[in-house]
Image 1 (cartoon, one colour):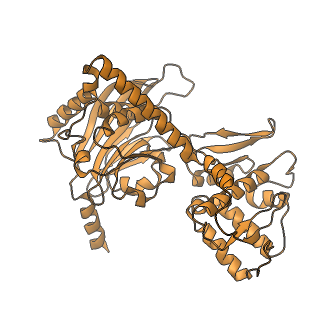
Image 2 (cartoon, helix red, strand yellow):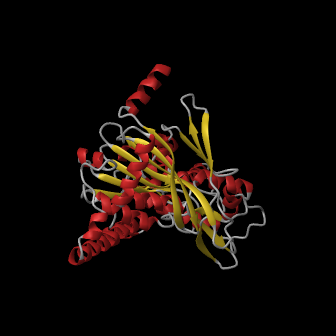
Image 3 (tube, rainbow, N blue to C red):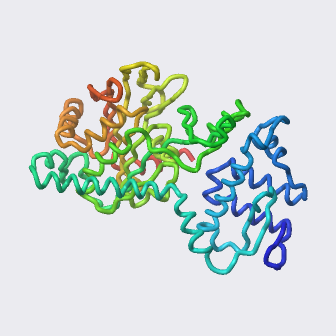
Length: 436
């Protein structure tokens, strides 16, 4: 490995330690494709056997000996993304590293250089920042807030009655506990997994979405089955269809009790982000990601294949009830669907509140946020609870069946309701310690 600053070149053992530190960072731990590529280039460089583009294509991306780099830029694209990931790492987690890994343009070897004093140039950090998905989220949040401010002003200047529909007070039986603890609110959107696809016929890349590929593991399995597919994980993710309407519904309520509100994508959070925050998740089951660790504490399970089903477990973890989602074929006009959506409100690790607005598709999700934002619909929900439960508990699981045509729901039926105890996580810890 070359050293561009005339300092002592680290030994092979030290280089392996440097590379391993990079691989243990969040940006690489969440990207097995690029971790493997970085490790592959490092090993090749250490062995002084610098690979050619064709060799990389065959070894890592399942191409055959007919691979033509003039027509297929898969390797060049992945190398470019790897460079960007290294840049991002050294701007954040690795900004204090003594040495830096560099892949020179036009080469497939790893060079190691001593970090320059101070931070990278301001303009480089600025452009790197602009590439990050958080900018899109921030802009979206700003636009939504401006819309709500304008709408609030319009309502106040005309008639007070529509505003009352969206009012929420500390004694509200659904939202009341969110008022009490004063914690900031983190709204988490279950973002869709997107991919970059190279099209030789167009000679360019495009973003694609495959409903059966929702993670890097799914993509890896797909590429093992179809090695010639020119697909790689995209650096951007997608807000689910109708997500902007869900957010506007929820913002109507949240800003009544908290001004400290953050917006996250489920692909970018850790469990540490959840402490001392009230959490509201909005999205599909498949996009829960790390939140599955919390969701799976409940007696609810789901599957997407061979059909989309929701299961309710009994005390012995046996299936007590099963619900089948009915979805019309994609090409059918005036689609009739039966969706199932959950509203789960549960206690957090200490005094937090966790809320899950989750289901298989758009119809159930939009009906739940609409209900949570509308005082009259919440009142109807409370009445339905009292028909099957003696009182309205602070924490609960509520399952709804939503029938719709296209994306317009026309029936909402409460199919299942269960109270969650306040010491829910305490009981979970005790059960776990007894088993151990």
